[in-house]
Image (tube, rainbow, N blue to C red):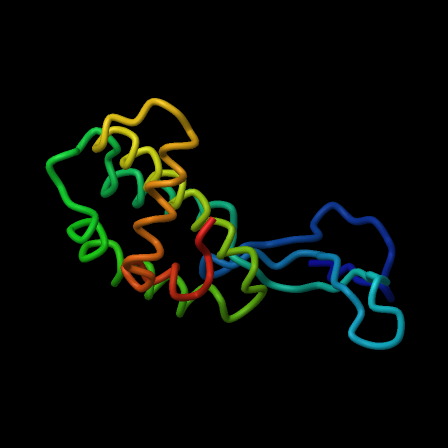
Length: 149
């Protein structure tokens, strides 16, 4: 395995691998010293694409937009332990990679709101979504982490 980074610039056939649902590969990283806008390449870990797909599939199975009999609290009760586990496991390295997956969950929540309350426009769906978030900011675990959009 060739661990390409800012010091090793050669091209090789194998520059990445997956292990324990993490993908180890060259990634760009913003500099912590001097010029903040400067980026460089490091060999680092983050959640793998397969793991992201698995999380999205698990969310899709649980949060069905057409299941309007279920309450938002019911979905939260089922999803929160899973979300907490995913966050605890996958945010060890490159936290932002996992947190983007929860934008998909927010999209599914908005689809459920659209079907539950029979809202036709995106504007009304977003208003209802924001209302729920302000009334119950800790309903979903990822909302507590600031992933609300």
